[in-house]
Length: 299
Image (cartoon, rainbow, N blue to C red; front, side):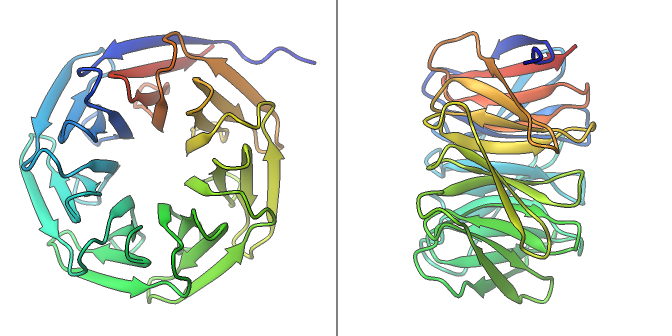
């Protein structure tokens, strides 16, 4: 068996151990932006390791997933505050309450229509918010689905995981929704990303697998060497590989379009890797819930 490509790993302390760095994304300002779910703050780290923190009000809002918006700002979900937040690259913060009580917004991504699309895990809805703050909600055809992560697909639809329904959903820009059940009843998909091969790639936290679904609904699944690794988030790099976090195994993995899997142990034990994104430096960055952000640089 060929040895996996080497990577060097550097960890940067960004918060206290209880702050909970969680989601992470690359901003248009050449920095990485991340949420601190327990501290109630948004962080920024440059590729050189300089850190800035922007506190939210209230601190209990539970900022979760963050994404770059079409307006050059960063947009994020407030899972416990039931709001969508926005922070500019200069640190100005705005917040938009959702119409549905206890919506529990979690995943968020920019759509092809210039709006932000997000999941409402607590309300079985997909939401859409314009950059001016106008919100529209679309009910799911499945109850108790716990819609989680969401990603823009190559077909201009938004694709999302349905964690408790063991399915992948897709919604078009007009609000029509289709549901694709997964083969295993225990998959519990969470993270999802658009791959370079025209498919969507996702993680099955319950089954220890990486999944791939084409726009026409064809699904393939790839078992991880450690089925108890608890894969959580996934992203695509510029070369077409997908990188994912193994929350339960303290590792970051990489899967090629043909299904080869490589895994890399993180230096700090029990660091709880969650969100993952490619940085402006071409490295892979992951948020560690125990207070650090790690950079993986392939060689």
